[in-house]
Picture: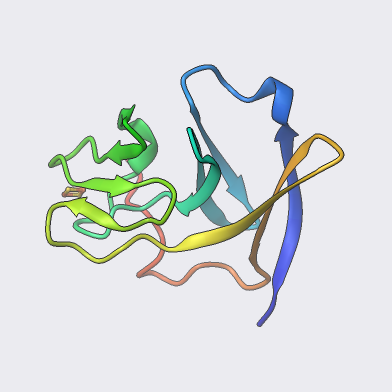
Amino acid sequence: MSDVWHGLIAEAEFPEEGKLAARIAGWSVLVVRTDEGFSALNDRCTHQAALLSGGKVRRGAIMCPLHGARFEAATGRCIGGTYADLRRFALRIAEGIIEVAVPDTPPGPHERPVET
Ligand code: FES
């Protein structure tokens, strides 16, 4: 298994609200912009697998909309709750385009969010 880079969006077009959810090669990816830059995370809360992208980004953290766990965007570390850290994906900006690297195999059941 290896990671493959995928172009996502022009940096200049990144949403003002500071987050963007995308499906990339079967992975649910949440890209968050903070003061430190961009970070790509698995869009799946490690508590009960809710989509994190419905949550708010504040002070460099994303809050799960279901029960309120908070995860530091830059690292994926759980900082408001006792849950596992989020999986992070490599991110780079190439010629103004945000690119994210995801595994070349689709996510297993423990890495997919529950979608309603
Ligand atoms: S599912 Fe995210 S805090 Fe419970």
